[in-house]
Figure 1: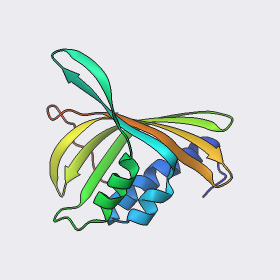
Figure 2: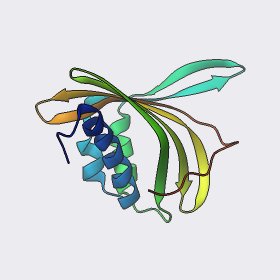
Figure 3: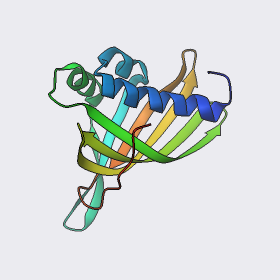
Length: 140
């Protein structure tokens, strides 16, 4: 229920994103992102890490979520850490991404959210990705 605490309200936005992904609900996915939000991943090549920004990624991501796919996109999270200072929040969660019941990849998602007139919106989502040593995370 909104208004319980800023930390819970910010986490509810992250949960809404993952629920919408599982449901294939592109409108709900779009609703959690601020206009111009940045998506990116930390990539390591030849031992050097860098941020791979995905310009315009929210539109592509929304379209992909809404497109028919044979297996559910099920990003399960654990160990959330939420920090809030005024209208700025950071949510750090471990995740394992499943295609149906099969593990695909895992890592950490880091969300930056800003609270505006429409409530908390994701302005940045950066993740790490690996395919080995992915923990089993049960559905909530």
